[in-house]
Image 1 (cartoon, rainbow, N blue to C red):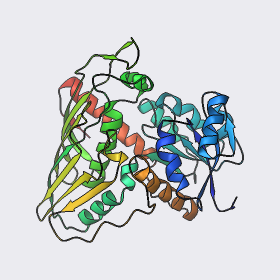
Image 2: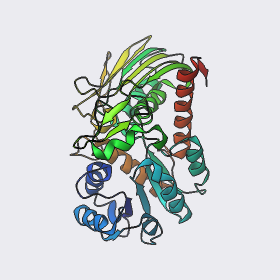
Image 3: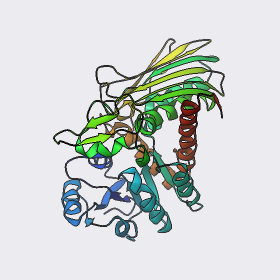
Image 4: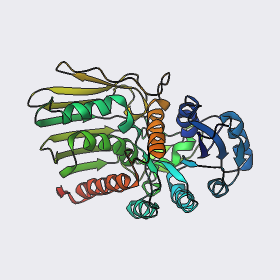
Length: 359
């Protein structure tokens, strides 16, 4: 093994499915000169052994905290269910590891703040809002900052997801319980809101309605019915620091319409679209940029040959490695995750109270 490669420990291994299998492993494998999958952990030793063999790792752990304490691990990739994030992240930080944690960081604001406060000085952490590493989104930000759109006026966003529909597969039944922190609002909503704030500036005020349209959900392939306590539709209207007015709709259970992001300024406009349809949301696919004016082309992906789930995760990992190697801090981190969690809490409060929220 080359000494310059980052040794990754993946928490949340599964040999056949789940986000580590679908996104992280294909992305890391495209950069063998920068990363090596050193170890994998799962809920049982048997599952860990299977995932380790499938991922091409060197060791398997049936207990995640043993993995994060392994001295041969440099970076811990946390890709387990949200309720399990806190224990793994805190243990990894205490062990002196750099950490890439999937979004949402915690089940609620208290957990997110605790993990952000635990990051030691000099450590590198990244939150998995991977759309912020997509070349089209970064290029859109550059064009806006250079003044090509002029004053930002109106932004309209439609961000559908196939999840939170009329039924749920067994491994997604837990997504129906708001207490678990992995909901339409946090996942589909959070991934979209973070890009909106990145391009339009922070929200300064907002109104919102979050609605549960399907309160009982059958679990596919079983006789089980679970209660849905989270929203399956979200609508937000707000004003940003830039002065831009934005509207956002996030509907669950939608597979026949695709993501759209339209931003109009005083001098021009731009649009973000998906290059290929993916039911998990726009962040898990190639994002395309269109402009009303002549603009330089979007730079090529740093990691070539990927599409769907790993395409933006690969870009995120490349940026994270650059930060670790150069001592820079450019990627979305746990403080950004805290801000996004607070924004989601404000959206909840606006919906419950019926009152506009100031931020």
